Length: 432
Image: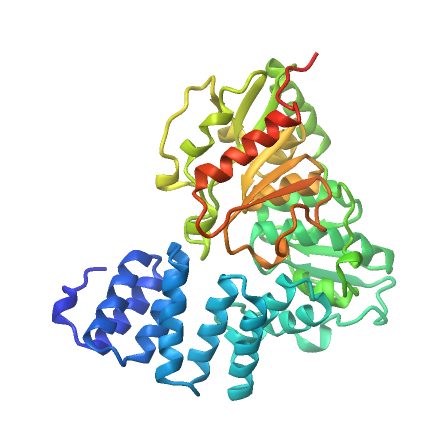
C-alpha cells in the first residue's frame, strides 16, 4: 500500500489511512498518521482515541493514557472515547478505574461490543470469574472480531449443565487462537462425564494431540461434514460448566499427552543429550498478535541460558519471530529441531522430553503447562486476563512459574531473574 506523504493529507484522510495501516499491521506507520492528525488539529478527538489504541501496543503506555484522557476531555459523553480510556487503563493494570470507565461507556451505549469485551477482560484479570465469563459470552456481539461459525444455529447451542447431553453428539468448536484451544481443552472430559459424545472442530495442527489426549474425542478433518445434535464454543465452557471462582478451575497437573508413536520417536531423537538439563525456548508469538510487541523479546536476551553448566537449549519457536531473532547461536548453543515437526503431536512429544520450558506468552507456554512440563513464562507489563495480576503461579497450570516485567523494567533484567531462578534451584546441574 503506497500512501502520499502525511503533509499532503487532510485530517480525515490521515485518520482513515491510520486505520488502514493499523488494520494491515503497520503499527508504527499508523502511530505517525494519528500523531500527524492530532498535530494538525489538537481538538480531533477521534485521532486522540485511535492514537491511544495503538500507543500501548508499542509500549508507550503513559502516552496512550494521555491521549485517551484527551479524547474524553474533548468528547466526555462519546461512548467510544470513554471505552478507549477504560481500555487504556486496563492495559496499565488499573482495573478498578478501567472497570468504572467501561461501565460508563456501556451506560452511554449498552450495545458497544468492544466495551463489553474489555469489561470481561477487566473482570477476569481481577479474578472475578463468574461475572467475567458472563460478559465474555457477549463477545459474539462483535461479529467482526468473533464471527459465528457457518454451522451455528441458536436452537442447537448447548447452554447449561442441566441440558441433557447423555447419548448426544456435541460439537465443541475452537474459535480463537491455538493457545486458547490448548488451555480450554481441559473441559472436554467434563462434557464426556455428562454423557456427551464429543466431537471437536480445532485447527488441523492440534488434531493428533487432542485425539491422543482425550480417548473417545473425535476431531473433524478439513473435509468432514458437521453432524451434531448440539454445539458449543470452547471458550464458553468455563461459564457453562460453573467456573465461578479460581478454585473451580479444573487444574490437573497434566491433561495433554503426545501420541504414543511420536513420544517414542522424540525420546530417541533427544537421546544424544541425555544427562543434560534440557531447556526449550520460545521468544515470540505471532507477529501480528495485538500485544506481541510487548510480549516478545529478542533471542539475544536469552543468550545467558546458552552457556549454563550442564544445560542444553532447544528452539521451540514455532513462528517467524522477525527482528526478535536478532542473533544466530551456534547449533551447539541452540539446537533447532522444529523443521522436523509436522504438527502439535511432534511439538508436544518433544516438549515432554524437556526438563524446562522458558517461553513468552504464546502457545508454547500453554503447551508446556498442559503437558505438565515445568515452565517459566515471561509476561509483559500488561498481561492477558488468564495470568491475573501480581501472583507468580497460575491457577490454570500448577507446574508453571510466572516472571512479570514491570512497565519500566528492561527485558534483560527480566531474563536475568529467570537465569537466577535456574541457577538458584540448581536445575542446571548435569544429571547423573
